[in-house]
Image (cartoon, rainbow, N blue to C red):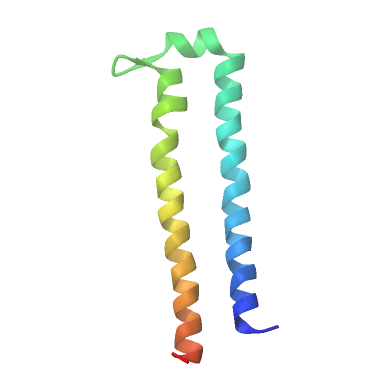
Length: 88
């Protein structure tokens, strides 16, 4: 197996290791809001109902944080290949 295939498999493993739990987290937030709608709607943070925070506000910073982290890891792996093999 060449170095490129190894890096692709490592990147895929990281993507799935983060992506699957993240997807389950997002689905569970929507399920929580759906199943406990009245109880969640009664809680208010800074004059916004909790369900707004969960499904409309909190998801995006988490998504961007994971995205930035993954891109950094993927770029570091690619830099590792470049350092190993150099410019061809």
